[in-house]
Image (cartoon, rainbow, N blue to C red; front, side):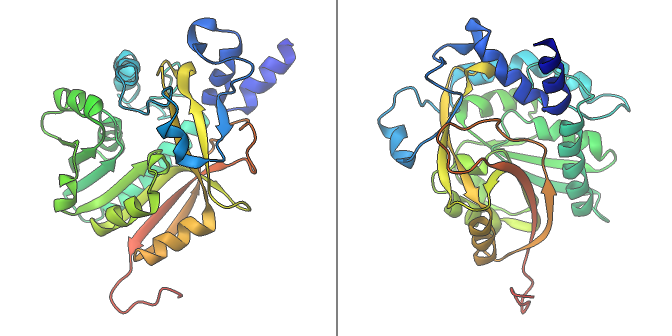
Length: 298
């Protein structure tokens, strides 16, 4: 048993190792039981949300409480000149995780590309919570002014404004009234029921780069909906999300006038989704708007 545990710690990202703790830790598991896996395929799709009171989504106080509890450690992890192998979602904040380091370095590449020859960069962080990527952006790109805009739910925006009064947090659709050098959607787009409509909106306010990352994709099955019971993160909620067919997603992007510039491998995936036709993996996608007269097939 100890050998298997050590192998799991070496081969799985900490988020997935931590997720396995719900079997042992009754205080974290709440409604989770052997008959209720953390991840589950939902064949009826988003209709489930309208009839299941346990699906409370992200706009709950416990999500904010979990973020606040880890915030001091997250801030400290970004200080200095050490590695940025950190994730605000991990049970324990550290700086030496290779998977998290890859995720942040991919973002650093995108932000640096956006900021070429600029003294300031405007960022829309769609689904950005309380502003974690604001601090990440300043850590990976010192010397460039970050004009940070974040769209999220009321409970998170309210606290984000307290942390960063100089930034802009939007609870409504008024973020669509301007455009941004970089539009970021990290682990957020797939939580929109009408994801393709939301993608088109985000594309419409992109001046230079659009980066959709930590997006769960599948390669052989049509897009489908899964449920995650997020009690092991201390969130006390359940929510639905898409596993998007990669080809369908890229076709939507092309139809919205966006050209794929680079695809990124994100070392993140659920270890098991009960009943799912295919196990998804997470990817990142960097887009630019098509230039006028540019062929979308070239």
